[in-house]
Image 1 (cartoon, rainbow, N blue to C red):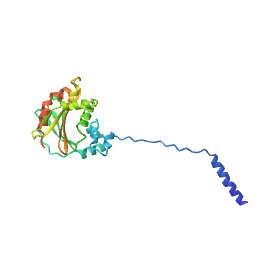
Image 2 (cartoon, one colour):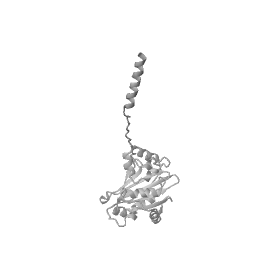
Image 3 (cartoon, rainbow, N blue to C red):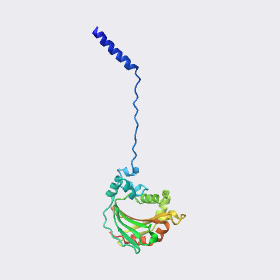
Image 4 (cartoon, rainbow, N blue to C red):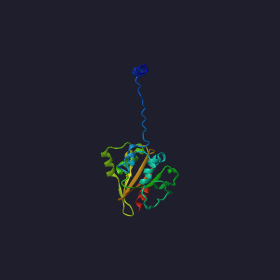
Length: 221
């Protein structure tokens, strides 16, 4: 009799469990997007982050990973230069070796920086596209970009190093004189790249072009 009750109880439990509705587990998938563009995460190219159009200085300020990448890529270069008349030099900080500003009160927005990076630093084309993005100019077609490069002046520094001028006002011929603009220069060596960049209004950078050239041509390693 005792065994009968045991079997009856087991059968009852089994039947009750069969009648219960099957529980469906629901999961909520949370995808955390990286704070920085995908090129920063490319482990194959140590300078892939240079391909972004964003301002690297601001990205470094906002994101520790970006700052680490910049610190690793910054080249320690014993670089010398001559400060053009009418410009004031400020001490370098972070990845900048130096910053220059105009002493002219009418050119307060003018800023010039010198940055040295190791390796190829993403390539000239990638950096041009990034600089264009910073002044709200869409990336040009490959053929147009090459035409721009072919039209740019190449100079020799006082120490016989080649430096290529990159006048981005080339893309702003029909723009107003007060739009943000930039003129850059790139000096490439076997293991490092030196970037010189002048920003300000279109009118200001065009007016300051000769002084910018003087700075670029004075660079010496």
